[in-house]
Image 1 (cartoon, rainbow, N blue to C red):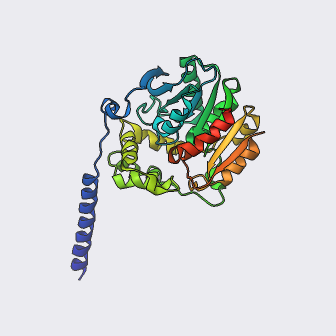
Image 2 (spheres, one colour):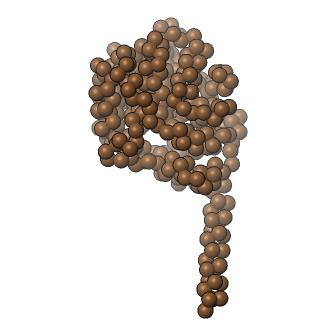
Image 3 (cartoon, helix red, strand yellow):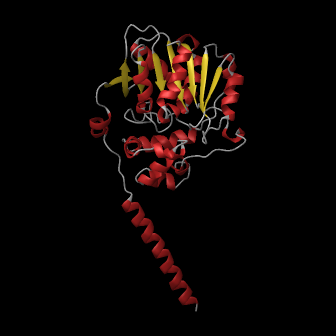
Length: 319
C-alpha cells in the first residue's frame, strides 16, 4: 500500500512539473532589443536624447515659443503613449513634452537599478536642464504623479503649475477600502514567480492588468495590449519593474503642505487601484488645490477618456 501511495504521489508531482514546464514553454517571452521596438513605437515625432547616461525616448510638440511648456509623466509600466490624446488636444497652443521614464518603455533601465522617487526627481531635473526649460507645467499620472508632486516640493522654482492624475504617495496600508492591484504587479512582488515573470509573459496577464485600471474594460483594445506587452518586454524592463515594486510607493507626504504651485487634482471616480478617498487627502494636504472627480473613469483617465480629462486641464490653464 505504501509503495502504491508513493508511486501515485510521484505521478502527481511529475504531472505538476510537466504542466509547469509546458506553461512556461507556451508563455516564453524573451526580452526584445529596443531597436526592434523602435520600428513600431518610436515613429516621428519620437526622438532619443541623452540624460544622465540614458537614451531617453521623448516627444516634443507644439510651439517652441511657449515660455512654460507642459511636461507629462506616465505611471508604472506605461509609456509616453498614454498621453497621446492630451498631446493632440494641447499642442496647438502649448508646447507639450513627454518621455518614457527610466525603467519603463523604450528608455529602459538605469545603470544603478534605482527607481526611488529621489532618483526620479533628479532625472526630471536633468531632463529639464537638457532641454533648457526653466519652468514648466508638470503633470503626472500614478507613479508619475508622485514624481511630479515630489519635484514640485523639492524644486519649487522649476514648477509653475502642477497637475496630479490619480497620483500615488500615501501608504497603501492607510487606504481604508484596500486596493485592486493588477495581477502583473502582484506577480512581481512574489519571489520565485518574479524570476519566472522576467522570462515569460502570458498575454492574458497583460490584458487583465490593463483592464484592471480601466473603469470600462471594453475600451481596452488589442493594440493597447500590444503596446503594454511590447513595452514590458523591452530589454531589462521586467527586472526594473521588480525593483520598482520593491522600492514601494509610500512618499513623504508631509512635503505636500510645502507645495506653492497652483495644483489641479484629477481623479477617476472608479479608480480601484488608488481609490478616490486619496484624492480627498491630496486636496486637503496641498494648500489651495482644486479637485475634479471624473465619473465613470478609472486609474488612467488621460488614456481612458482623453477628451473629457483634458477639458479640465484646458480650464485650469485658461486655454
